[in-house]
Length: 474
Image (spheres, rainbow, N blue to C red):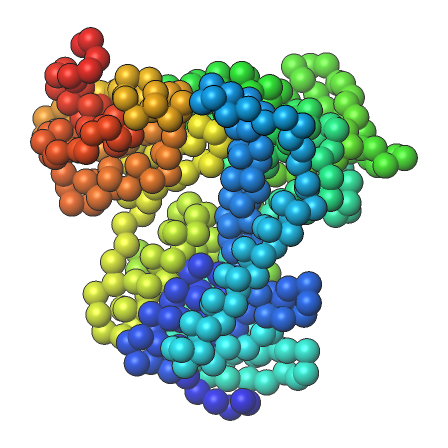
């Protein structure tokens, strides 16, 4: 392998890296993909954090725990009575692992089908697009006419809290508990903290989340954040805002957490503690000083609007660069870069990247919030509609939440959309499409939506922008 040259060398096999590699191969470019992740059995495990210890396994656990919760609390209203229900946590984890393994194998088959040379090892960018490749067997060097850096991100740690993988864990450990902890502490009430906290709360844990910020989900529209806070309180999640954790120590298989709430220092004891305070670019040990690639103070790789670094024909995507740390954002960047390399017109729009939190109810949004529009001095009109006023929502027993749309006051162009409620992760796509094609709230209002469906809430919210919702008093 040493001395080989490829049209494209991709370092990192997560959603951005593997999408870039596959698209480049489809465009008849020779491709090497380097990824160092291994499964417990020692086999390659491409797919990055998202597939292996993030998006996919967490959703598997969220679905399993949601089924369990519904059987216990909700199905009796449908006339379904179940006695002596219990949760087999080990089987739940086994199922989750099976989903991950199946998808790992699917990616390996895609690499083979697209004639991508896959290497299970690490890649290190040297000068002149030379890439040092290290595997368990040896270290060699290859050259890329183009190099795409897609190494992803790693969890932040906090001083005074040492992750041991057993009692104090990051998201990886929280996906693999062998039994439901009686008391679970979570540092951080962001996406990861809320999702994993929800999983174990449904399965019987007493969950406390410590959030340093004074407001919940500051990046979300204020109305949505308030609605979410009400729902989480009903579910029994104890979210303590404005609370800063000072340290955590393990003693006799318990975790003692010291924190400051207000001006008072307090202590709490848990069976498990999850640290979920965000992620940072995995740029360490990725590029040599003379590679030509420049890092920001935050450790991200500097790129332009097309994801080009300052090094000639070296690109960077996903969590390594500016923008939200989201799998689908990385994938679209990777595809766009591959198309640009091949002489096509790659395209992605950071302004129209949807966000999703897979709690119950789900929370999804795209574009601007009211807070942002006010800060920017943009005139806007808003329309909202509750799922409780939809026939489908009531029939499903999923009537919590609402849809909110924001449109330019002069042009009616859709500027933002927020949804909290059932299937918000799917419903937001309609709003993304409308915004990407510079559509208006009137466009959404004029489209026929099937009845009865949850999507009618989007339709009615669009009508409400102009004060003419049919199933809501305006």
